[in-house]
Every structure is written in C-alpha cells, then in structure tokens.
Image 1 (spheres, helix red, strand yellow):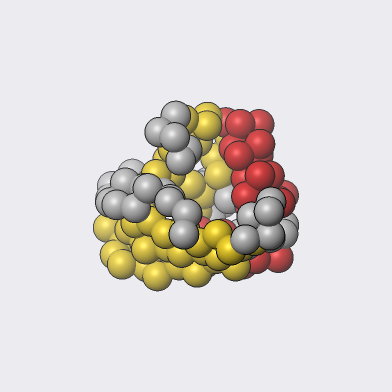
Image 2: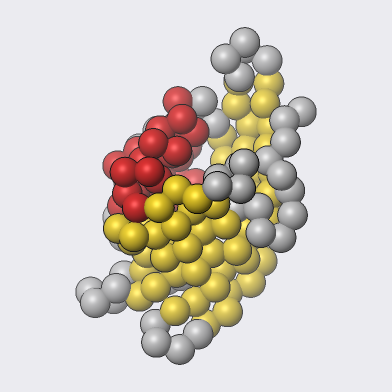
Length: 131
C-alpha cells in the first residue's frame, strides 16, 4: 500500500515494522534516500537502508508514531515532524525501549504517492538510547 498523503509514510512505517514487512518498509523510501543512523552516519540508497531496517525488523519491535506537524513545501515536497517510540526484546531477552523526535522530507512521486527522500529519526531530540 503506498502513501497517499505525506504523513502516511509514518503511519505505514509503523504498520509495516510492527508486521515485520521489510519489503514494505524499503518501498517507503526513494531509491536515493538518505537515512541518519543511530551513530550519526548515513545509510544512502535502498541497499543500505534495507540493511539498517533489517536489523530493526529482527528485533520484532512495537513502534508508535505521533505526527506533530506537516509542513508543505513547493515542488511536491513536505517536511513531516513526528515523535516516535518503540519497545522490543534485546538479544539477551531484556526489554529495550527507544524514542526520538524525527524530521523527514517526503516527496510526491509522479503517480501522486509519497516517499521518503531524507529521514532523520533523531533530528529534534532523542538519541535512541536504551532503557
């Protein structure tokens, strides 16, 4: 299912992650998208984003998003601000919780759907720390 509104990218991300749907997650990103990693490095392109998301999917987390604001831009761009949190079991079976405040740039595609063009899960706060 594609994103028909900018904020649908987040709604679908949570839905796909909670279902363990790696292919659905990767499809939310443009082929040349850049995603900021927890350590501050960038995952650029589908292969790198897939590798990053694969580790996340393997944790079988429960993720929630709260859309804070959508700022429409020109040329079919929008910025989406969200607060997110997730919980999962770590490799040792202990609970892991993470949270952050993201900014994403999404772009309308030629078919009218939206995909992530740049994704920074920690842009407005939260370092993805464990508890």
